[in-house]
Length: 451
View: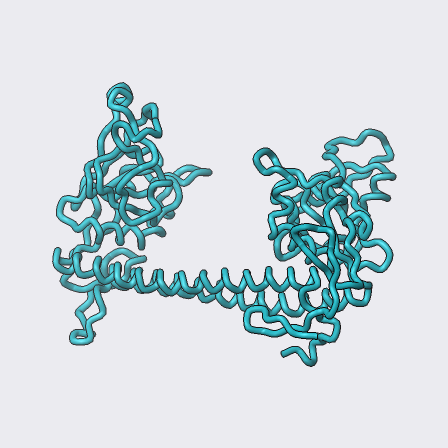
């Protein structure tokens, strides 16, 4: 018996194999069975939504939707109720270790029911798989992860339309079954190993959040205190008069946006748009994903521009959202028209890049003054009265360059963390695949001798 390497670790392999009969899965250990899911697990589709009782025997019971099936397990925090007949209560009541598989939505996403509620049932957006004989529910959970990651489910569900992983498709899906004790070994091994991998992923995700917080702090400090200077660490400070800005360098001015820029409000009438880039560029929030807007997906023809009475925003203006997404800003490098969810500052005696950073740290200001009970909106007056710290032009330029360098540094670190997460997830997928398809032999594995 030789060993196989998996991302730097070596595992034993089975000595003998046979053809599995599943082309894309090739062979399996000689003593395993290649079959269909319906021969290892009983599949039951949930009930169609029933909002009212049909007779006096119907009872109101909690039920799960596809959205309750999440990658990390069952989310039972928000569960609705509907009416069930006595027969439906008998046939659809969930039992511990039932494997729940999404029939619609994110098709094939699966989780195990661990009695998150005392009593619960399922809607017809979920297929329930209940183990037959001594088959292991966890084995099926990991097997479903293989079918989903391999794209098998997407192919048979034809995602060109609305995808449905019907009970019939689920029942007919391939399945490899080792002996019952071996199933338990595989489940235990994957529980342990995937938990370790998930811990690594969580640590990387926490690191990303810390890096984002640090980036925010570095930018805020530069905009409100200036660039750190070892030669002059104790710059004289003064109260800005703005509570959330605190103290600022004494030689800076504290003003409002209306005194250093003109506020640009888009027209109310929306012009007819096109995707041919023929005419004047039309900017929306979708175009504000980078620091500069150099082109837009949509445009407005000259004729539509005149009919709607649109106004053109000149290049080097600083565009910001006036409806949610506060703190996001981009600088236009072309003349364009903005939609009604955006407003803009046309700089008069302030650096565009520096003004953009002022907006970035002013999210709390926009959220505080936003109007409307549902959708928070900031009007022209709110934009005009945005507090602005005003160093010299030379300092503004220096602060902008410093922030750009710091942002690039943090972006590099965050990207490395995200790449690491992708690699860890690939290892998790490969490990699950190897274990449930018999590419590695874990029959002798136990938590005490794990290396």
